[in-house]
Image (tube, rainbow, N blue to C red; front, side):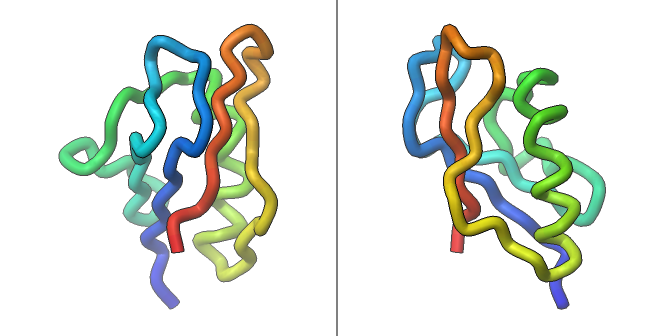
Length: 78
């Protein structure tokens, strides 16, 4: 089982993210060379889903950053 997990932005009203941006996790560490902007609010909200995905349990629904004014939606890259 690979612990490499990639999230991709599918919708964004946030100036920090555009559609197609990715956050790549190699195990518990963010791969800085392959990842775009790292917003701590988004990382904090998404990490429980990332942890599950690292163990083989992939969340199928889109996930949203809770910073409601910006409305950034992420999905796991398959």
